[in-house]
Length: 330
Image (tube, rainbow, N blue to C red; front, top):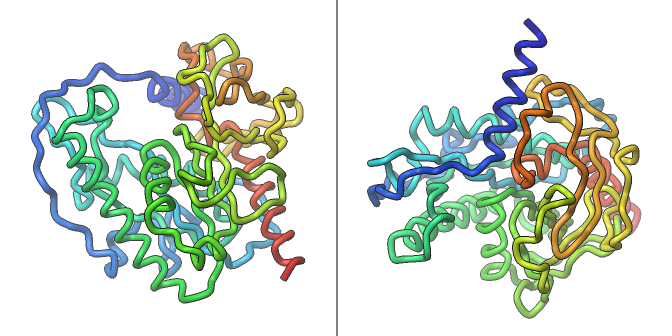
């Protein structure tokens, strides 16, 4: 039974890493607005025990530093579906929980994770040229994230440092949030932003925080997208910020798989050390194909859905190191 479960898990992991041919025939409807003063509209929150509290590896301590996490696209509607997810829908929330559990738990070494349900845009917005409908869908999702972040700031109180974390569509929204809303006070409170899975410009005229260039730096962002070594860069890396998720610097030197402390790709939390290496090339991170039981199912060269989980333990260790360094400075 265990081997069947593992095979099904990796089949899911492989399938969601591959793009889907989905219908563009969707309906633009505005679902009910989430009220972020209500705990029910948070998949993760400091005031309740939830999936963001999942612990897959021993954690000697946490730092009490709150994390605001925005999950990736889980809304893949079929023909006749909606351009925005209904954040109150039980079905939508169920789809959300896998990503939240598997990704946000990488950051809970810092402290409580706040993960809002939001009316995210459908996956199809990435497959068509921008138009009024797709822009409206994306704006609706962003406005939810912004409203949730404003409530997050109220909940944690003034002057409290915090961490940002996101993947895929979540990164698009957090990047925009930082660009539009982060004044000097918020920049000073930011420990680090893990903006993973989307291209982020490393230009302080575009984003008011710099790219992290060493493993202990704070007040900065890290970002990467993961591909097989034989893949072509999607954008030639022009001004794209990328940090190696094993060395945590911007060097183009390859870090071998044996230096990876552990990936977590199964929902049971099994840690797989030495699964995959990392090297920066043309604005992305490239690596050999990860090899483990069932990995033959992974046919894509784009490891987008594994961006966080392939480097899960490295992320935890890096976040812990940054927080310890920050403690010492204060």
